[in-house]
Structures are given as structure tokens and as C-alpha cells.
Length: 232
Length: 314
Ligand SMILES: Nc1ncnc2c1ncn2[C@@H]1O[C@H](COP(=O)(O)OP(=O)(O)OP(=O)(O)O)[C@@H](O)[C@H]1O
Ligand SMILES: [Mg+2]
Image 1: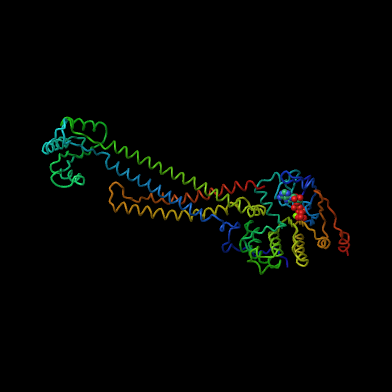
Image 2 (image 1 turned 30 degrees about the vertical axis):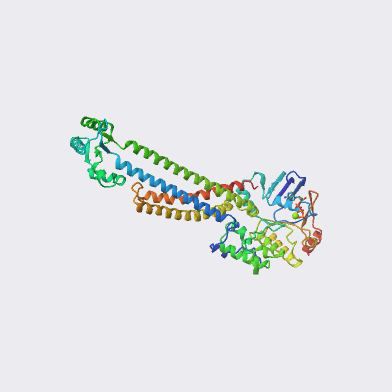
């Protein structure tokens, strides 16, 4: 699904934020991306959602080298990636409904289908009453849920979420983690950047740990325990 | 409950209702200004085109009306500033008329009545004694079968045989001057149209580039969500087209009203010099083409501007 080989990234003439990143994510896997603030989690996400090209190294997504892809192929590829931005990036002149509907509209889906799907998902994330509300009049947590709904509405093959539960209380946080889990079970590869130890412990997925520009993969702490539960 | 479960019956639906642009274009600053600018451009284009059409039909009327005609003047004075009497002038005129009427290359010849000539200069001299006593030239209007060098040469020769002082005025020189003048004016009108086109392109391209800069975050977001260049371009192109439509329609209506008023005033004063605006099919088509072209120009300018900005995104 995603393969990074000796990838480095620097912003402008600054120092390398990411140095020599090497990893492979299998299709349908679920990962947490963690590391101290400023370690480059968002930067790595940006490379994964094709928001920037790496300054060096090779990035392969969906089996294709993105450096050699044509422009419209890249656009199609981006449509299969759902992103929850750390700063949400909602369109402030559009209602919650229209924000969530955006990926489907870009994909050119019929309006009736859009309406049904968006209404149902907004209901699911607890914003059924707020579908016509503009983002700026919403609380941070509500905006975050709109951003999450927008990222998952088109059932992406890859979901990248940058601190998606940062502004949410544990209950709604877990509810949304379940949403990601459900999506994962339907085949979506998921990477979630988070600091939330509780959530990482509860959902024992493998961890990508970023530290000073390099990445190492840790097996889930309660991985063996989960296996045992699965056997019995 | 699983929100991701595909539901077949939902795929049957069709798009319903209208929605806003994904980009907040309707609320953009400067939209009104651009509409006014395009309205002005269209107005100017309509005026230039109207002028060009009027000049066209004017020259057409003049050249078709005068082409085979010439005026013969029997001067009131002989060579050495001796004056001819009225009777002498009349006699000469009569001789010319007789002589020419049976020449094969002449279609018709008419002597202008002395009364007519008096009427012509009456506005300057007033009625009465002076007019009766003043020596007036004799004038004849001839129409040639064909207006070419040989027939004109024959005519000149025949006139010289009658009297050396008789002058022939073929209109050609002043008509030529007029045609050159109207031609130059029409060229200027065309040039004005060209400038209007360029101004529209520059104004729309500038406005679109500003919008792209102002809404850079939104544009980038759409791009990151997988919106193709076409998807983003269409929105801004449609936006420019709506502005173009609004502006050019206002400009067209204003232009037509003003042209109509000019025609009305010109008709009222009865100024013979101004041609009456005979609306032709070609003119109507031309007037419709102007706003259409402006809309196309606006939309194309928007398109290429957006594509150029988008090309800078990875
Ligand atoms: N657009 C940018 N231009 C220049 N430098 C940047 C840019 N974005 C991030 N950086 C730098 O890259 C480094 C990593 O930033 P990044 O946002 O990826 O960290 P992070 O792990 O997401 O942090 P946090 O946990 O606080 O969100 C930081 O030192 C930051 O200053
Ligand atoms: Mg970050």
C-alpha cells in the first residue's frame, strides 16, 4: 500500500525534518503514528497524502512510484485517500453537510446518493442536528467530527488522520476510533497520528514511532495478549 | 449500523437542487467591479461596432449614388473675369444639354433650373434683389452609361468643343477622400474592438489570479482531496462566465439604447449627411456576437489563468 525508501524531506533551505525514512505498510493494516511534538508526524502525513514531494528517496503508493505519475492519475489517487488534517481545513463558507459531501461531489456521485450518505454519517458522528451549520459557529470538537466525516465519507482505501481525537472527550473519541476500526475491517489502510496513550493501548495496533527524523516500527504492547484472547 | 455498507437503491437518484460553489467565489471582493468593467467594455464595443456599421452603410450609399454621376458647371464668368449674362449662361447650358443628350455614352442629362440654384444659395444671401442680379453659374447633372476613362475623356472633349470654360466635376476626388476617411475611421473602430478584447482578457485574468491567491487554501484543499484541474477550473470558469454574461448583457442593452437615441436624434434633425440606420441582419448578428465574444474571452482567460496557477501545485 505505502512504501517509503530512504525518504528525506526539508522545507526550503531548512534542516531535514525527516531523514532516511524507510517503511512499508501492508494493505488493510492499522497503525498509530506517534512521537514528540515537532518530530515530523504532520510532515510525514503530508508526504503520504501527496501534499508535497519528498526532497529525496522513493515513495510508492498503491503500487505506483508517485514521482513518475501523471497529473490526473495523481488526482485519482488522491481521491482514494481520506485525510483528517490536524487543523481540520474545513471550508468555512460551506455548511457541515456540504463540507462532508465534498469528496463525493469531487468523485461526481449523484446528488441523491450524496444526500443519503452524508445525512447518515452526520447522524453517526452526532451532528445530525448541525448539518446546516457553518464550521465557524461550531465547537472545536464538532469541527473535528465534520473533518473526520469528510475524510471517511467516500470510503477511502487509505485514511490518514492527524490527531483526530485531540479535541474530543474519551467517549466520542472511542466512538470515532470504532468508526475507523469499522472502515479498517472493510479493507481501508489506516494511519492515525496521536499522542493519546489510552487510545493506543486500547486499540492495539502497531506503532510507527518518529524520533529526530527517523522512524521505527513497534509491535503493539498488548499484541500477545490480544492473540491469546483471539485463540480462546 | 454500518454507515459504509453499500446501498444499491441510493444509486438511482439524480442530482437535485442547486448548491454554491465549493470556492467562496460569490462573495469575492471585486466581482461587482468586474461586472461594471465588462459592461463598459461591451458598451464601448457596441458603440465602435455601431459606428463602423454606420460608416459602412454611409460609404455604400454615397458610392452607389454617385458612382456614374458627374456635374457640369457653366461658370458665370468668362476667362478674363468678364461676367456672362443670365441669358448667355442659359444658352450655353441649353447647348450642352442638347449636345450631350444624343451622345451614346450618356444615360441622361438634366439641367438644373436657375430657381433651384437660387434656392441652394438662398440661405447665405437671402431672397430678393441681390439674388436676382447676382451672376449664377449653370449646372447640369449627367449620368454616364459607364463611368470609365474613355467615356469621361469623350465627355471632357465634347464640353471643350462647346466652350473652353466649362468645367466637369466627377465627384471622384472628394468621394475618394471621404472613402479614405471612413475607411480610416472603420479601421480605428476595429482597433478599438481589439483593445477592448485585450483589456477584457487582462482584467479577467488579473481578477481570477487575485481570487486564486485569496482562496489559495480552499483551492489547495480541493486539489489535495483529488479534485482534478478540470473540476477546479470549471468552477472559476463558470464564475467568470456569469460575470461576463451579467456585464455584457448590461453593456449590450445600454449600447443599443444609446445607438437608438443617436439614430432618433439624427433622424429628427434630418441631417442629410448622416445615413439613416437601416438595421440589417448582419448588424443584428454583429451586435449579438459582441457580448458572446466577450463572454467567451472572459471564460477562456479564466480557464488559462487557473490552469497556470494549478500547474504550480504538486
Ligand atoms: N510548512 C513548513 N515550513 C517549514 N517548516 C515546517 C513546516 N511544517 C513543519 N515544519 C517544521 O518541521 C518540523 C516537524 O513539524 P511537524 O508539524 O511535522 O511535527 P509534528 O510531529 O506534526 O508536531 P505536532 O505533534 O506538534 O503536531 C518542525 O520543526 C516544524 O518547524
Ligand atoms: Mg502535527
